Image (cartoon, rainbow, N blue to C red; front, side, top):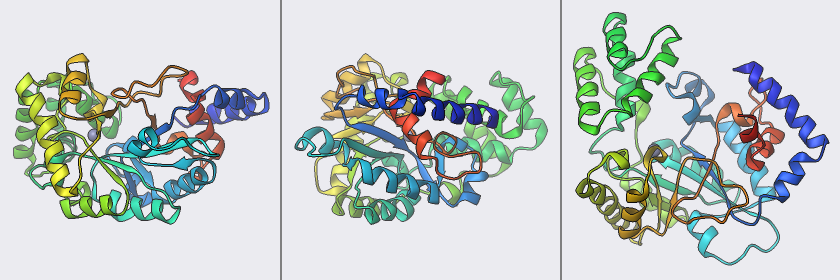
Length: 335
Ligand SMILES: [Zn+2]
């Protein structure tokens, strides 16, 4: 992938010199820019993390937040859409999905050092300690399988294992998303039984007490379902439960109503949108890039997916020009 990054870096420079980036930034309009993150970890842990796009090295995150805080007014999602108009700087929103422990221990202190607050979308079963996230369980179990059962598991999912072990594992997890919830659970439970392992401390969640504390410190807590179910796959009763019960539980932890939601895995359809509104969510985020120039739909707010390769130079250092190109949608054009 590194040649792609080099080409992109060179094009970023050309786009800047030609004024393309500035024009795209100006055309972005007044809608708040919403950024998506998952985890912030020490660099060594990022390098061995099974889902590379989900883990950002902490010094990269800190450099990014410092850069953003100088140029944007950083608000929570709710305050960005409900609060007063910004005075001098455009609005940006830092969001985190899932509810991992590093959000509390690492990301929140960095944000606060720069005077920023974020929106944390948390899966209630995960944070309440009732269940690990299904894709973390899958990753841990697949990584624990010997070569032959791993190949058999991949083959059953229609995944060819000619790529690296990491790429094959990610392809298996992607393939799991195409199964319904019950079949996915059966497959994961079977692998866990075979390898005798399960999602471990690497995949730990925040606690409800930490979630409450974040809310008290001015961050926003948003819904992310109970079980991280892929909502379009749920029947009506399960869909309502995933949205309503999680929203009620989070409100109980925080002592305040919950306004915002992020669809797990960005998966939604018209029925999910209607159910989210019925459950009381006024704002909801997807995982697709922000719509350019279009009016923002409050239950379909696009986000810029922040990953290590998208905002750093090949040597791993923060690359402000790459972030600018990402925020302006220039990299979207190149993808
Ligand atoms: Zn998620």
